[in-house]
Amino acid sequence: MPNGGWLDGALNVVAGVEVLRRVAAEGTPPVTVRLVNWADEEGARFGRSLFGSSAAAGSMADQEELRSRTDANGVALPDALREHGVELDSASDARAGLEGAAAYRELHIEQGPVLESMDLPLGVVLGTFGVERHQITFRGQAAHAGSTPMDKRRDALAGAARLELEIREIAKRTGEGAVCTMGGVVTKPGIVTSVVETAECLLDQRHLDAAQLASMLDDATSASQRFAQEEELEVEWERIWSIEPILFDEGLIELAADSIMEVGGTSHRLPSGPLHDAAEGARAGIPTVMLFVQSLRGLSHTKLEDTKEEHLELSVQALDRLAAKTIARIAAP
Image: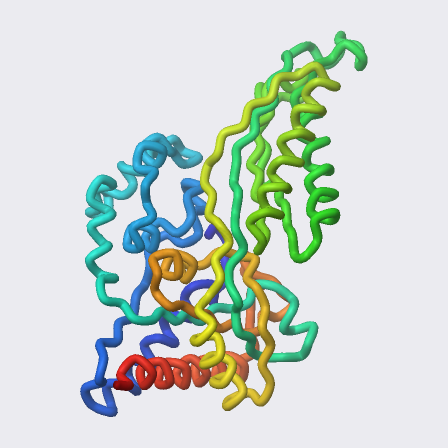
């Protein structure tokens, strides 16, 4: 994540090391305990989130699409993987690492304002939002900025701008935590003396309910077609990536809530808008749960990302309690 913070992702790895130290100090555990540092959860470079965990979970079925993806500098994803000793066609061999997995636990900063607004340090995650991620291209006609009357223009950016405003209304109408984001717009020819001929937009839509997510996508598609017609443009949609809403294991949610109560006194249950590797673990049929720790000002994906030290300590303690409870449940006859 360019200009990202110090806790996103890293917290769980460091906390997991502390849990392993405690487990090892007590002798050989009754079940195998592993710490995983997944590759490229974010997908910031190539637009494909959860790369490592989807390979291990067996849900990576889009190799042909991945083969064609490039970053902002034109580097192809398979070439970037090869630089690190990984071949795209063999990435799914990682599935062997999850064979026999009985539970998956993950600790993460909330990356939002809910826990802070409630003055709570910790929360239990009910599941992760489903995601629809698309590239939308509006095509118009380049023309001289000085000699082309306003009513004669086929300005591709007009279509993109109207869609950006409309997705906010779509999220508002849908409610229940719905979010829509226009994460990037690239215009061509991209000079101040020309009407925009092509505007390429990146759209991200998220919701915890699959039907609502599908409705949001339909609304955005219809709106883009309406704006294209009104602005005398053409519009094309290309799916970059999608994942259905994922609900976590009810039994582990209860263990997580108990763990938080033991260290913090109060627990709260909330969905996750951001996507996490835990979603792929759950998709693979592994009982899964997540813990959230409060994010100051709700900020993440920025160097301003931060969490109080005392809350970080509580989060590691809660993860450790959850690990102990989970191990005991798995080992019970």
